[in-house]
Image 1 (cartoon, rainbow, N blue to C red):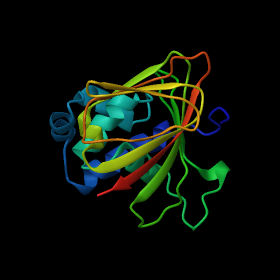
Image 2 (image 1 turned 90 degrees about the vertical axis):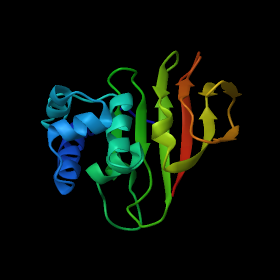
Image 3 (image 1 turned 120 degrees about the horizontal axis):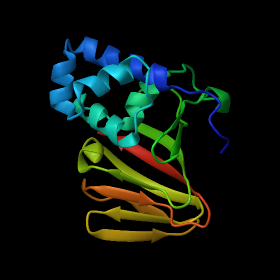
Image 4 (image 1 turned 60 degrees about the horizontal axis):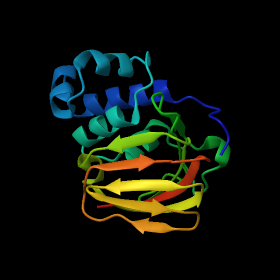
Length: 188
């Protein structure tokens, strides 16, 4: 997966503002629901900072949606084909985690996301990020240690893991290569 060609941080901020406006929520209300400070939310909405995956998960959960849905809504591309150059790509500034939303806009409950997690990096996500979805992880290249609650799954290339009930999770690429994996999400 190539490095990010298009930074969508400002469009994510605009989407968060739009989702908040649709619900007629103040910044304080979103802060209370997400556990993200009002100051940080304001900075994100204005496109002054690129939020981490952990923050975006908390914001998306407050809206009752997945991280994938929030990012996809930030950069909707109509049509049945999602061209590589048009797919929203986002980089977590804290870890270098890069996620590409592959699925075209549709009313299907399935979303495909490709992720590159740099060697040595860890991303921790709370159980709330899995509350509205079921997912499977298919490792394309590298090694991935996926901790689901108290269970650690060591994945090698070609391995596929179906996640269980929502639990706090940690993605870790032990190296020496980046972990490159596909996530299939089913909403509902």
